[in-house]
Image (cartoon, rainbow, N blue to C red; front, side, top):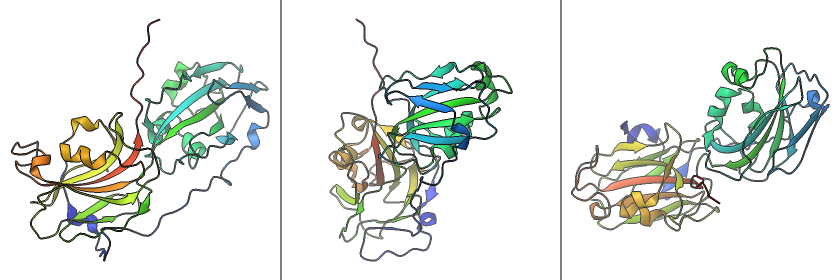
Length: 324
């Protein structure tokens, strides 16, 4: 596991009076002036957004640039970074024949989670088309020749000079970081948390003996769904040991992790159950509620653990096949 000295994340900040504080520089995500849809005037998209759309167009349809238009505007969580996890339904229509070349199942399955950057590897134009779109949106995208990754285009029987129309339904958007309201916490001898603008936490462990009881402090209080433990929860987290103050695990260098709470230490489960999506939680876990006298990977035996956890969403378990 990659070790990152906690002092690197502090960045010279001093937080007084609050356990958690944020760096300035947050921005809003405004989509109202983003779309360029002049090349979509001859395209009509209809049908319910929970079903494969009906796409009508004059053929042959030609586009020289990636353009997009919102058919339906969702009011859910917005896509604000290309690292954000999302679930999409998608159909692709040939600009040459008007035939549907591909469509996802549109069966309500929300287990197909991927980051926007992963989608961009296949269709780079999706970044502009989806940035700032909210959960529940339907977006129609004109794709010029070459806009789809060549191997994928070949599998769709798209020729090198063919344009295409993509219709994207944004089913689920996970938060990129905890977005809840800051909470005031008081506690002597408790770690302090600072945050970079992207949400990455730095943890300052005091020069003191660790607490002998489980400590749970909600630094940000989200308004999303409650964590019950019945479904996996999608988290960003950083963990370190009190004794050496060195990060032993963090998700912030990769995608957020999907975790079934019953696979985690007792103290971690207790800390997260009852919390809500959008919350950030500081947890100090004594050895008897952590890994006890058993070493765990790079964690020595009898370690007091410190975690800062961002709760980004609740996962839907993978669909189970039904036999009639």
